[in-house]
Image 1 (cartoon, rainbow, N blue to C red):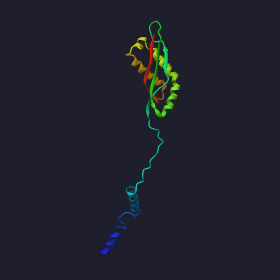
Image 2 (cartoon, helix red, strand yellow; image 1 turned 135 degrees about the vertical axis):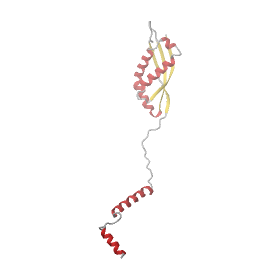
Image 3 (cartoon, rainbow, N blue to C red; image 1 turned 180 degrees about the vertical axis):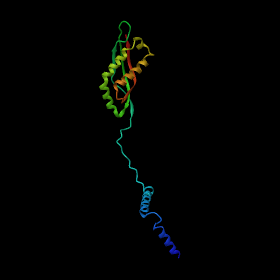
Image 4 (spheres, rainbow, N blue to C red; image 1 turned 180 degrees about the horizontal axis):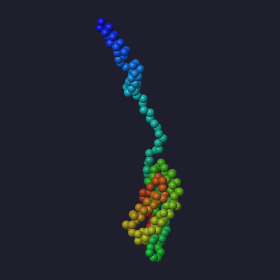
Length: 168
């Protein structure tokens, strides 16, 4: 009798089944199985990428062998005076790009000469004789030479090596 009662209840509900359809169960099982393989399966070793890299910069100081010689007329209110200076310069550059820097110096040498001459011509004879003014002049020349010789900024002038400052 109990069995008959269960059959009657099932027929009353119109044949509705309880639970999920089999396709959903298969999809959920596949998703969980795939996730398990991803998280718990063997991990592939990371592949090292070898990018073509430039050598590490190796900055060194280079003393330029040529002597810069200038004869000019310093600024003065009346009369005429002459002055002469001779110096070398030291620049800091990457040793890996030394040939390129030397080519830049050759290319821009005349521009540097012109800018240095203009800067020196603004000095007074008194300023050229004053030991306290020389470091200021040196800083200006370092800036002018760096900007004119190395517009690509591959090198920078760090020091002026004075050989002669003569005012008459």
